[in-house]
Image 1 (cartoon, each protein chain N blue to C red):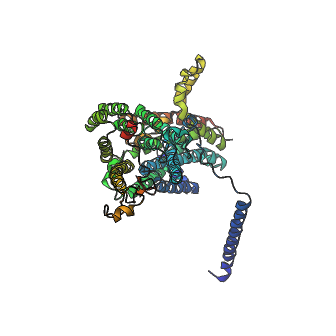
Image 2: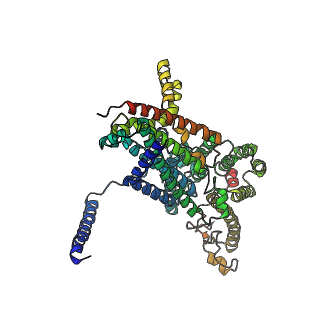
Image 3: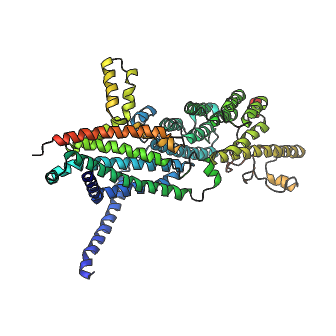
Length: 318
Length: 268
């Protein structure tokens, strides 16, 4: 290629770079003076009814789009709620409708996903976990979680796993052991269901709310989970139960030492200096436990185990 | 038969020369490849999404090819006036219609085969070295041969669309043919609603009209088995056979109508 023939290319490159720079400059100027409206992430796109009519083909693919949207919505809102919960006290569950961070669109997203693809197994199972998780890990709506799973059972009555999940929701979130046992028993009746589901129903009915029964429930879930997310969630619950058990032991030690000293204990250093503990105790996630000014042992807000769940037994004894 | 084959091969060559076709195939392959990225956002549902997006890409780009090439099969010959040369040869008019159709079906088959290979390649790449737990947890294997059943039904569905486009192009303009073909395609997915019209309308004549339209319009929903295949649900050979047979019969009806209209058309 000669020097003469290269010249137009050089001109073109210079022109493109110059025009590109002007374009970027204009965009920056426009963004500064006339900022574009922020994309409203609360948009549902379409209602369930409209979606099921408009999406006449490629429904499975559109279901995927809504599933991704549900995941993003849940993830973003959970993070926001957790950040807020670390600084302000979460509201009592009775005021769930007035949560500082709203999860209002979570159920509609999951509902549309499962309407478009009624066999979307993970959307039912993960979705029910998302919906039933208490604030700030979720909206704390066991009713919606059960409704979603019951919708799944209409399409796939052979899915004993949905009955197991319904039982979990009743047991862990609603603390309704009678309904939980009934759900486990219904699941056990489904052909192909594992043998332990029936014993789970019996244990729940006899010892509902007992920590060992809870531990059994989550261990069973961790061992039989068909996906990584459910296994991780069950492992986290088991760690939270361990953390509660350790807190009880630590609290006994703190109370006993405080009674001996005649003043409340407000720092781990006092117990370390007294030779009662070798160092600051760590929770099962590896984060130091906190000892607050009122001498109560708690998990740190920085811990992945925060906030600890209400123990069913503690709730029923209230 | 030899004449028919000659027209089909010629039609295939002509389609292959069309640059738009390459763009469509390349874009579809890129989309199938991009499904890998989308799959990362979906909490363990990567294979479902890759299969959904892959099969939808094949169906959608196949639809564009079928419609936009299908409507030009006859009209291009007329516009370029090459139809006179063709008719001057010892070729019967219905052979032109059938040959053109066969050529486009051959083009679609080759392109769908390329896109299917791309889909399997992406699935194989993502599934490579996956742990046993993840493999067992999946509803259907990564390289599920059942995907081919979905692909075959997509091809038969596209044959109906091609035959529809060709039928309209024998008597209408390319733009109108495209609109009509897309209209039939959309209506084909709602034909199930026409069948159940008697549940929402009490008027007997309307019910009969709806029932008549249900049988006249192509019923395209049964050709979409993506959901079943992706969830690892069985799709029986009997279902495949009946659905494919329906597709072939419908194609035969459209080709017969198209060939008849084309045979009687005056090109002066």
